[in-house]
Image 1 (cartoon, one colour):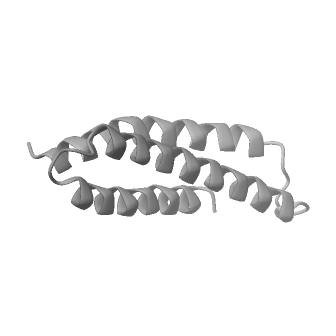
Image 2 (cartoon, helix red, strand yellow):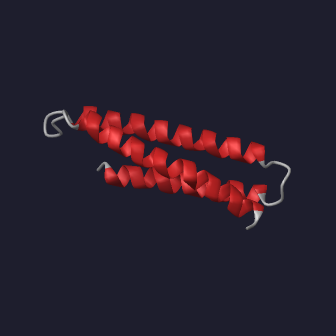
Length: 97
């Protein structure tokens, strides 16, 4: 396995559980919101969780890249991690629509 692949695997091993935990937490928090009457509150909660997810995933990616900074493939891994972060955020937005 290349250094880039090792970094990506480590990222997803952390990101996937974080993603599902935040989705579950979001729906628990949103369960008492009546979207017919309070869509703005629902959207704000969603925005807060998106920011939290993105921030957490970016921190994880930065930590991994820092740990592996002297290995080959770090630049390529960084690009893959940016794409993965976008995909996790997009998936969260889709699940919470």
